[in-house]
Length: 67
Picture (cartoon, rainbow, N blue to C red):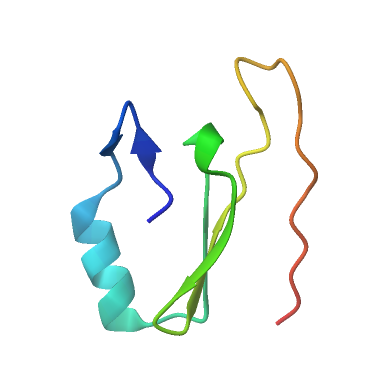
């Protein structure tokens, strides 16, 4: 989820399976910079909080969420 780089998913499949088992309300992660933002899947809010656009060229706004 929110992990596409070079046209393919590059995230950790085992971690995603575990997230679906545990079912947290919120999953926060980063690093795949172009996929910045939020999505909700199955009641879990996923936040890709990667703020750099490309090699430090620009910063995106912080994502604020309330629990």
